[in-house]
Image (cartoon, rainbow, N blue to C red; front, side):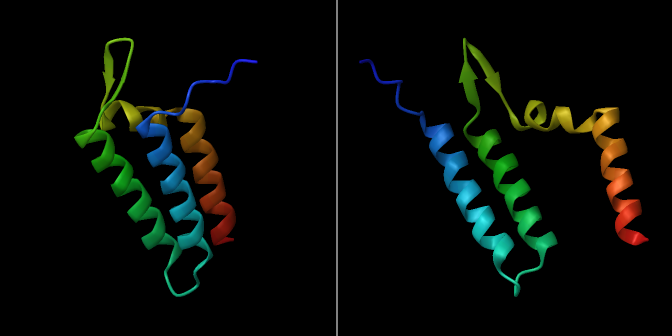
Length: 86
């Protein structure tokens, strides 16, 4: 039986950041906005300092966040904000 390849250092870092984010999100002393800003800042700085390389192409932080500008995602987020304000 062949085992799958071991995760690379980017995957391990993202898993560690996910665990840290979950811990931060459960703390009531730290506001959710501060925890979210920390996670986004670590992602942006991490992908800029250590870009992900796959098949010779490098993924920097600009490409990482480019999907967040999609119209459908913005509409869903706007609906969630409008619902929370009501």
